[in-house]
Image 1 (cartoon, rainbow, N blue to C red):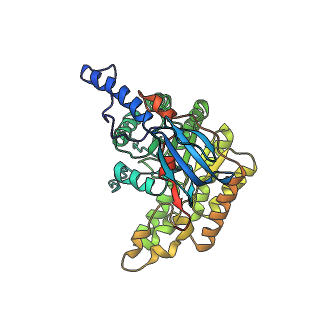
Image 2 (cartoon, helix red, strand yellow):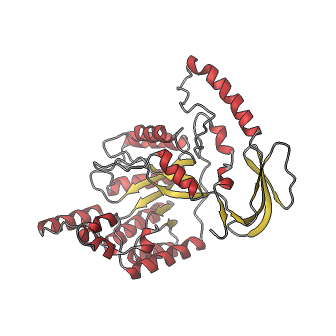
Image 3 (cartoon, one colour):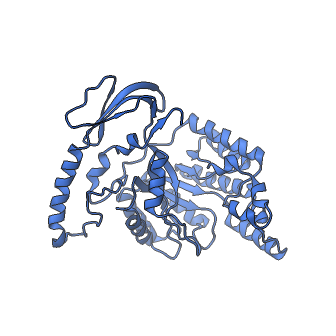
Length: 384
């Protein structure tokens, strides 16, 4: 895990091999870390603690940026900050596993920065985000990794890590992906869509999952079928059906389901761990559940828009529907209900594997802490 930006510390990394201009900074860096850790003793009193399996009222004591005790009536050590959490819930910091911040995508860019996105995350109690670096087929994986790391490090207010996008697979890409995993990344991201930009062909898909299996990482996947989408888009263009209301028909639910089935074949063959991102429709959900039933090591997520919106939002007149376009498109109301219920049931049945602890070279010691933001940003009023 890559730790949050610390305003006390220099944000520029130490150059590989050292640099004399940084010698005094590195010495000061160690001293400031020690002082900063000592001053961060924190006691949260009388909070209504909510964990994955329990709920109870107690105190939480943190020392050296680590939760050290959870029990009633803890006496604060000298100099500790004390927060009265009476009448408030105390959650562990939430993890958002699907985040795009710096997003150059086929000629467009996202509006967020790591400052704005991470601050918004903390407001909602999210203390760790997993971003998806997205070099395209013409870029080198390591260059993409370094670019996204440079964008985030020193600017992200919460902890972060990456799903590393694999947009092509050859000998050079494989060597770089192995090195990126050594740097601490524990998951890949692949696209079965966006042909000629990010999408993998079947040989690349096979080799990516084979590498992931060998390295012990999980592969997250956008499941569609790039060739089917291209044919459907060409048909709609020929018919002059280019408004937002036709987006759904350019990549209907059956195309997402085909993508899920396709991924399941490769995952089952290679015994690889895979994770389906933004599952959006009942057809894809059924393919996912069928694969789990036969023992495929697969997990899935859905996103809030697929539970609250449907395809009629994209059909609003005067181009208003364009505000509701995304890929996958929103489906029907019946699909909405099935997707939410199915993903919740599947998640509760079996948890994904524990992944490696992610580190930020060369200061890997920071990864061993538990962020105090996990407490302070997650205090929530029961009435609010």
